[in-house]
Image (cartoon, rainbow, N blue to C red; front, side, top):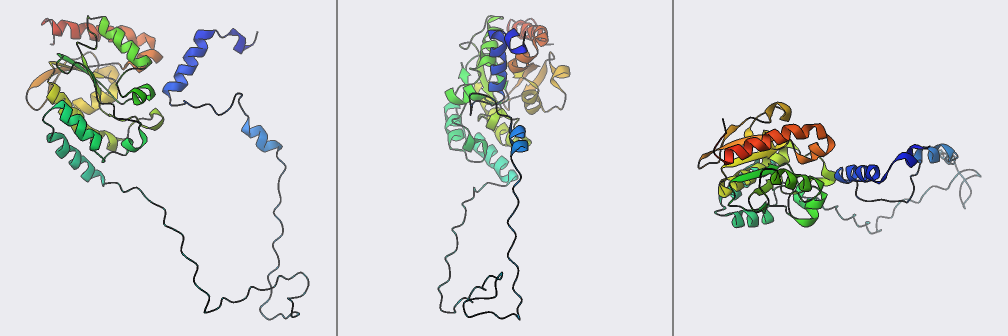
Amino acid sequence: MSVTADRDFADWADILAFHWEAGVDVAIGEVPVDRFAESAAEPSRSRPPAPPVRDAGSTGAASGGPAGFAPSRPAPSRNQPARPAAPATPTLVTQPPDEAVMGAREAARAAASLDELKAILDGFEGCALKRTASRLVFADGNPAAKVMFVGEAPGRDEDQQGLPFVGRSGKLLDLMLASIGLDRTSAYIANVIPWRPPGNRTPTPQETAVCLPFIARQIELADPDILVCLGGPSAQALLGTTEGITRLRGRFMDYDTGTRTIRAIATFHPAYLLRTPLGKRFAWRDMLAVEALLAGKGGG
């Protein structure tokens, strides 16, 4: 039996979901096309021979040169008007990296509330990701909650709906919250990067640096008791570490919001858990640690 026939609906659904999360969201044909085979079957095309160059000293008939020679082009007249220049291609004006980061810091500091911060982000032009994203993905949940979850960047579903963690990863996050008695009315959810990178690619260090002042101000204004970093990039950006998520997860650390020090912990991103189910047992331990700290029984 063929490999295709052996696959069931769940297999194909997982394959489709994998490509969807990778940014492959448009099909250009009903069947796959082997472009290499097409190239091999295409007959080689030889270039037509170039006309011989006429010697400067050669002469020809009044109607042109000898057979086989192309007549020379007449010299341009002095009175002939100049051909208009082609219009210049418009280019996007971008700020130098240092100026963009400084502008982000000043803009973030100016926000006195979460609503003001969202409005400032809507008008901020210092991050190129805004030009390719459909909309700003600011936050979801309860800003007055005691625990705040921060991921890395929005995906396709989040970009379409304007809310963080609403795709397959979001459904898994909802289950993780429910496992310790939380939901989106008792948790606050955001991302380090509020705009979707094209094709769900990894944000560049420059993009992260520009967006970091905004998420730091967002955490300060929300003022949670516990900060949960979802995934290595979020933990590295917010906690100022270079350690990988495998070594970083499960340990409580201090996080300075600017007004007080709160407890922070890192765990695996739900998207990673979808790809690597064996990591769910470690994420479960991390969620239990958060539950214990919320109950005043942990955090050491």
